[in-house]
Amino acid sequence: MNPDHLDQIVAEISGEMAQRVDRGEVASYIPELAGVDPQRFGLVVIDANGHVAAGGDADVPFSIQSISKVFTLTLALGKSGDRVWRRVGREPSGSAFNSIVQLERERGIPRNPFINAGAIAVTDLILSGHLPREALGEILRFMQFLAGDSSIVIDEAVAASEQRTGFRNAALANYMKSFGVLDNPVEYTLGVYFHHCAIAMSCRQLAMAGRFLAHNGRNPSTGHNVVSTQRARRINALMLTCGHYDGSGEFAYRVGLPGKSGVGGGVLAVAPGKASIAVWSPGLDAAGNSHLGRIALEALTKRLGWSIFGV
Ligand code: GLN
Image (cartoon, rainbow, N blue to C red; front, side, top):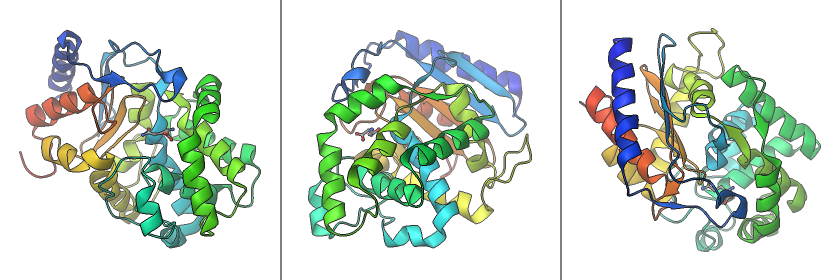
């Protein structure tokens, strides 16, 4: 890939997105997120050689929210290996990210690690044997290490805002606890979960952090092996099938890449062997995924022929 060509496409798409009036709805159920400017848009693509193509608000930190679930899953797999799959499944949910009915039918075992219940179960695994602040420190340091940037922090105001209003997540956690799926006190697990969702990162930092997923588990610039080839492939498979909740089918259909969204409006997408991509536009669609984020990624994969399903 010619870096100038990549720069040009990223600039074009960023320009096009700035003009759009359909921007979706900014999430308001976490009060602190409701005030984010819907005009924001950022896009960063980092190719296999480490070339960074950046457009729009590429360096403005935003709340990564559920994108953190990719990284907590990676940590939990490192700590517990396949024991993770005793607690959580690997199937698309076909329901909302915070749905509770499915948990009842399936006796407290969440469908996958990327819906809220599944991510809370994964956080509980990371927490076991640690104090909440140690577990949180481990997650934050992992993000800083992957992004090569020690300035990444947790937005305490967002964490506190969700802690005050996260009744649905508390219900999910208590419900799982009743089935013995969580080992730690519910308030500890939820505290760590809310705080890792509140990590603030820019598109540039996020695209950096996702590079190992695009390159067989290894950051090609630093040479760090983060996970095995097989594990990277499997995490990508889960991102493709479960990364956008009930919009995962539509995302695969339109974009054709593994991707994980968050209600902050960010999406991390992986073009295997080619690039790590982060996009941010705070307005969401009805499934809770970034509206323009998806449209921008669709334009990008179309113009570059990067869909994993063919050009
Ligand atoms: N912290 C958010 C929640 O638990 C994450 C949801 C999301 O990004 N989809 O509701």
